[in-house]
Length: 230
Image (tube, rainbow, N blue to C red; front, side, top):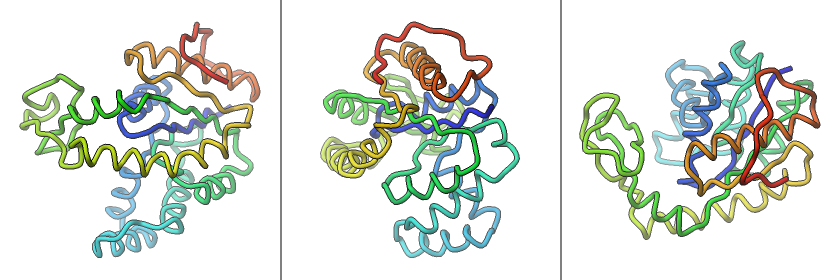
C-alpha cells in the first residue's frame, strides 16, 4: 500500500523540513510546488512552458496550470510507493482537483501542522537564507550556508510587516481548505510549536493513527503522540 501524504501548515510551521525528513525516511519523493514548477519549466513540457510564460509576465500561476503540473508529477513512476506533497493544494478548487487526480489510488493522508501566530512571526522574522543557493538555514544558524558556504541573509519577504500580511493571506486560504479535509478519517492536526524532533515523532504518530482507517503501512511503528489531534 502506498503512503500518500499531504502536509498543510502556515509559513514558518516547519512543514517543508518535516516533509523532507519524513520523505527521506520512507524512501518516497517530497513534492513541492516550487520544485515541480522548476522541473516542468526545465523539462520544457507543454504545461511547463505555459507556466514559464505566466511567470515571465510577473503573474501568479493560476489553478488550471498548477493542477496540470501536479497531475504530471504524480503520474511519474517514483510516486508508485507514495509521496509527500508540500504546498499544494492552496485552495479548495485545487483540493477538489487533487481528489480527481487521486481517484483509484490509495487514500490521501492529510496532516495540518498548527503553530501560534506569535511563534510564526518570531521564526520567520529571524529566518536566514543563502544568497547563493537559496537554502533556508535553521533559526540561529550562521553566518554561512552549510550546503555551499555562501553568505546567509534575511529573506526580503521575512520582515515583520510582510510576515503578518503573508499569514493573513494564508489564513484566508487555509481555513476553507482545512474545513474541506477536517471531517475525513485520514485527517490529523499536530502541534508544530514543539522541537523539530518532537514534531517528527508526532507526525509519525498522526500518520499511524490515520492509517488505521486505510490499512497497515509497513515501517510505521507505534509512537506516543504529545501533540496529535484527530
